[in-house]
Image 1 (tube, one colour):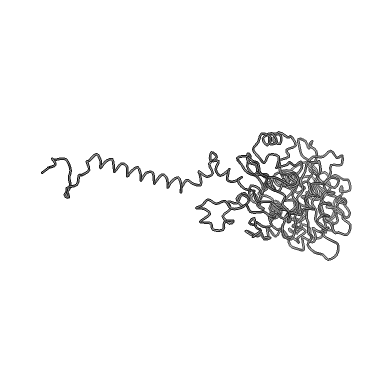
Image 2 (spheres, helix red, strand yellow; image 1 turned 60 degrees about the vertical axis):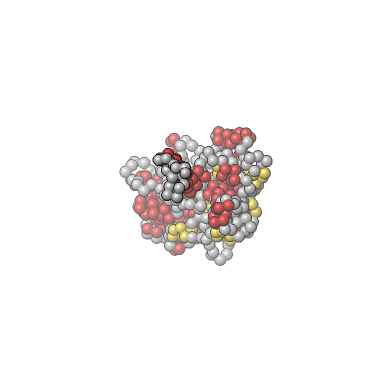
Length: 503
């Protein structure tokens, strides 16, 4: 009989046992397996999102351009497209008329990212938005890429083209709004650029990008949304609305108590006018608006008071840093702390008062819509590639700036400006047009070329309905000799409004 000696570890069934060393090795292997499971879970579950979006991870970028991108449309027509590259990134973005719509579309570049609607709606356009999935759970497990969705804008093609054509080679911007809904009909900025010129990742794309970055004309600056300018006398519409709302003025045709000269409080400096026709005391609000009298509107702004002036400006979008539509514009500013002399200057659109063309279009639109300011809206709907709606946008009220009675008085002031005053160049045969010019000084000792503004609204003559269009135009630089709102900006506003009225 064979006997096993001590230490051989046979068990009660006579099977060979496992040594202490073996047991330790087995335990260590089990611990390693458990650690690997924990690590795999951490990486695949808890860190998956961070790793997916890590700049060193090219998989998502390759997937992003592995199929055609969804389109951005104006009306029923796409203003974007996709083209095969034959390279690692299979498709790149194309634009049918890039410079005309760049202020709206922004750009989508393989090398430089994306902006504007291309950036805000990137998930939808690339097909990664969960709302595009047929069966979200299976798509996530299979990592299946859905076709890109489409973004339908609120733009009116004729109005947009009229805006770009009117601006031509000048430096400036146009924003046009449908007052009753807040739908943005035109959004243009010049000089512009072709976002398709650097949509790829080749050396030619890099060269195009570098040229744009060093261009002193700053063509990639969106002047309609991202640049603020002192609005000058165009801001007097806000001052008039505030004075009427506060009861400082009750009759636009009655003499005011405005003195001449009007010496700004706490100073020895009179507020000067651009025309001697303003140089007499007691001018009515209507006359002061028609002639654009600084002394009268500065005086009325001080009489109205800082709080009421700031509140009225806020009703139109000033001081709102989150005015998303869905793209976020720069914050338009009216100081909330000013002495009375500064308030006088602010009331005529100077001092630190500054606005984007979008917000000044909201001023005109709010007046036109009987005192109700609608939230600006650039996107009409989002759809799947087959046209199925993912989201429909609805108009919403932003602020009720003034009563319909006050709005009617401000409308009358603005129509008188066009019929009898500085806004004559905005007249449209067969239409009722209200507007206000503005020429804003800037630079050291006001040495810069003035900014020329015009804000307006228009409706067909006949029954008194809400005008279908309101517009703001600013010219920041021009070779013209007549650098005034009436001379430079009003004709552009007229052409945009005519394009909408022609519908």
